[in-house]
Length: 111
Length: 114
Image (cartoon, rainbow over all chains, first blue to last red; front, side, top):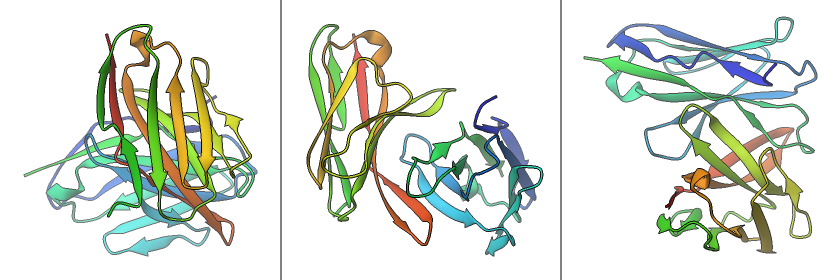
């Protein structure tokens, strides 16, 4: 089983739609979680951290379910500029091991 | 100025050649990483370094070597390039605070091995 698994997509949604991505991780001892965004042919950049209580940043909401070992990202009111690949990232042991990246989920927002 | 820089940005080389990809950072981070990215395979870790005297193999280190010349510099070498090393290569740095680690990536180096 892969350490971090994501549906590769692509998700094709119209502007204004709400879209959700899920990600599962295999290491139950994992301590910290993130979503990164990668635009086509560019470097990944941190979108947001994922906290146990869930967290929101504008149109973006991230949630963590430790019991089921999954992380979600919800995007409301999708914009054309949201088109990108979203990478789920897990840190099994902060300070001691590297981050583990999922392969990413591709989102295309269509006018 | 970019915090994490990579040189060259693009490189075409021939099978069997030795090449070096350079990474520099001005963020003052101790941790540095080299990844390659291939379509459908995501980011794969080649080598990483938690400080100047520390070098660790990642998921796919065969055919690669690294050198951590200073805190700010981490170079990746392909001793004898082969076509399946054609990929997009990213360098990254990170800091760890309050148990959270954030990675900052360079702009990438596109490598084509003929």
